[in-house]
Length: 161
Image (cartoon, rainbow, N blue to C red; front, side, top):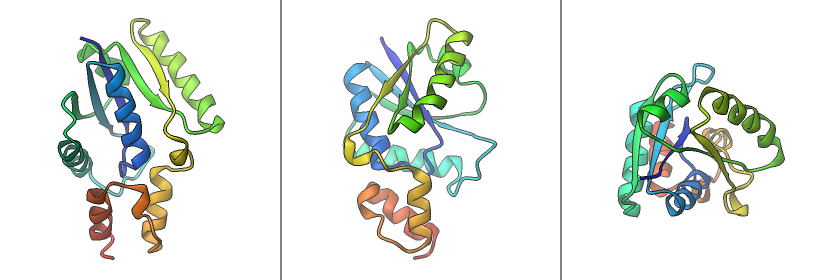
């Protein structure tokens, strides 16, 4: 079984992230969406809330070969524990490439058995990221087209809009 890990903070998960998941499940037997704890970020949603949001969306979309887990620590260690053969990373623009390339090389150094697979989202999502969505939501802008309706409602509730 070819298992892939798709890590991220997903705060919140966007339509771009969902597009990457849809692409990944066509390539792998199982995809584990991993909600990461990143000490350099202050998330709007708790880890549990992010996992619940993603699980709700995946259930609604009826994805069979996707699960969601939280992890803290070294990504390669988590991937080994899950018997993953790949780490999925989304590339939106050239600006993402340098950082992602560096991380892929570092992960390869940690384990040559785990490949990093870069997937590009549909071009309509190339400008989209969670930070932009949070900022638009905080400023009471229109962000409905950027996230799944479940996330839209959760953000509105979180911000009491």
